[in-house]
Length: 211
Image (cartoon, rainbow, N blue to C red; front, side, top):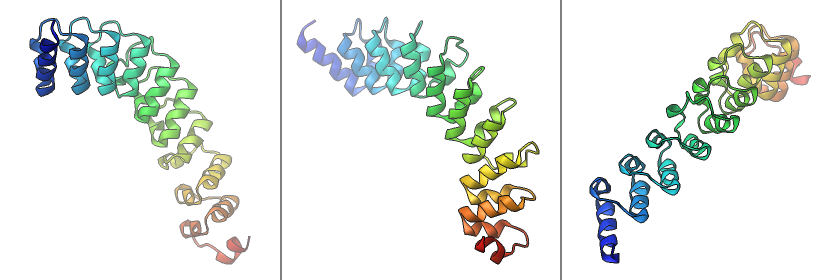
């Protein structure tokens, strides 16, 4: 193929990326130009190289659906760019991949089969509200959820005094979600933020603030 023909093909793809569908035996440069512009063009490319596939996955992780027998590296790249949904039933996903999935979007924890404690804790650090997707969360997980925004869990009757105390240590305003807080919890909440007293029924300002 002459340089002029190559330039014409590149120009065609750059002008309209769907032109890749009608180019017979496109060169690597033409394939790369197509997927960099629109990763979904991968579906129209016969026997793409690893470089072409990786570029498509960087454009959108969902393009992994067009890849036959993706490597672990490809799966990881897909997950980093939002493609977990398309490979969530893949039993070969590693903990590293699962971690990347929840780092990208903590809600991905709901699609992960048998997540490890490390993966769950990472998801909770991103957003405590995802604890609703966890079966039988441990006390440590509940505490992590509280620390990162899930105040609904404060209704959990299994929460210990220690966990409630840690919740107000993290943010004094968390006391508003605690039913019948103990004296110690009130004191700790006010210590963290004096305005937390606004959430205490019939408070004694002098008592708590002086303490």
